[in-house]
Image (cartoon, rainbow over all chains, first blue to last red; front, side, top):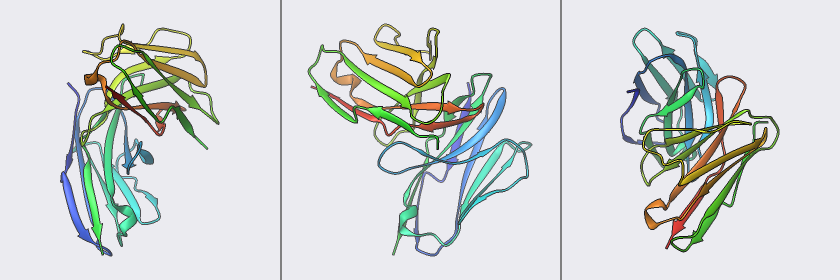
Length: 111
Length: 114
């Protein structure tokens, strides 16, 4: 059975802090790893990673994949209250690229 | 780009009735769409994979006769919850795949069955 594990489950930080969210996986027929941000409604896409060691960056967010150690991290620098959300990691597998989601990390950024 | 819409956003219905939820890809064609359900404070659970022009593929434990999926065009998939019961109350989210990998999600439909 495919498994995606995220840590920590929840995190409270002060505005301006830097956070690192972790995602490890055990799947068969890996194709891609995706990060999403979920606020009150459906997830919004952040990154898709397919190759090891290549950092993807968007503003204050960045992510990298290690296919040898089977994990990915999502970094957020200079956090803002608007970054408060649940961050979901999902791994795509098989020819249909089905996504298996982790349970998410709930991030709260306080003033 | 890559916008997915869902309708309705919220529905309340009586037990025993059927509810149809639509998922549309607005600015791209999606041969494959996915239906998920999410319980409070839990992650997304894949229910089924919807392929345009063919039968949907259901995940283990998901009743295909209860959750009817139709993917009649490259931009529209529908999920019908038949004879809904209170335990079907949940947040239903669809996604559409653009290209080979990335899935974009609709805004979700919150279903409450009384």
